[in-house]
Length: 295
Ligand SMILES: O=c1[nH]c(=O)c2[nH]c(=O)[nH]c2[nH]1
Image 1 (cartoon, rainbow, N blue to C red):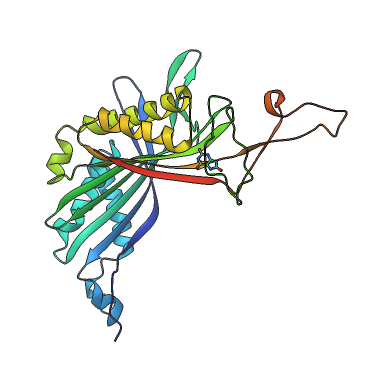
Image 2: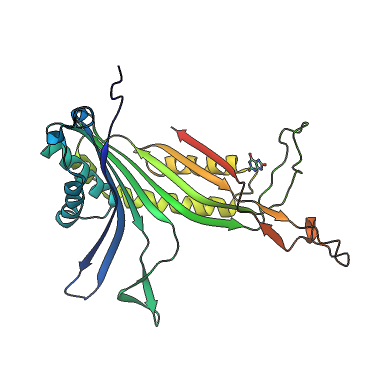
């Protein structure tokens, strides 16, 4: 006989905007995020016997996302996610775990006539700051932070040679190639006992995000890359070194290929090897390289 092996439900794609206004200076600060909140617990009967008495409506979950954004700071997103997740355990005895994902979109303050503008912002890229927090009854709060969608490219300083050559291989070795990727980086914190433990030393979250962002860009730029694998491992090592409460660091990086184009058929144009200037960016297929590094 079938039985429910696992189940969770909630609201996804809840878009939230919060402004904070400094009345004395007139400076306003904004945060825009997209939230997903899924619940687990003694909810089996809602699936198996149409028992809605155990269902906190997803509409109520959406309302709660707004109310907790009003009641608590939304920065850092780790703290907001922890407050929101813990709420469902505190409020509903039959809920055993709440999974919250927060995606923070960029609104960067404009500089106008050389000065930071008090209330105008621009979207300077598709990069997001992401947080996943799970509050589970009896196991505290687990948090994973990350950066997604930071698109980077270096026009030299990347090689790839020495790989397996056999009857399946056509790729030429290269000592100088273009390297481009959309960074998906994550770092997993040691579990927190409760929301108070998340709040205690809360600066760690912005500090780690800034460190991870700087490490990612500096290592990408400065490393004489032997491979995506080796460069991402160096990034992970540094993230672990930057913040001692981080247990794991991980990257998932597409290798966005830029192919040389042989133009010699046209008047003998030289456009390969050291003469390569015009390339064909590829939209797919792409390599996809992942790793997670622990202490
Ligand atoms: O950095 C790389 N790693 C690979 O595993 C790989 N495979 C490939 O075709 N090109 C690359 N580049």
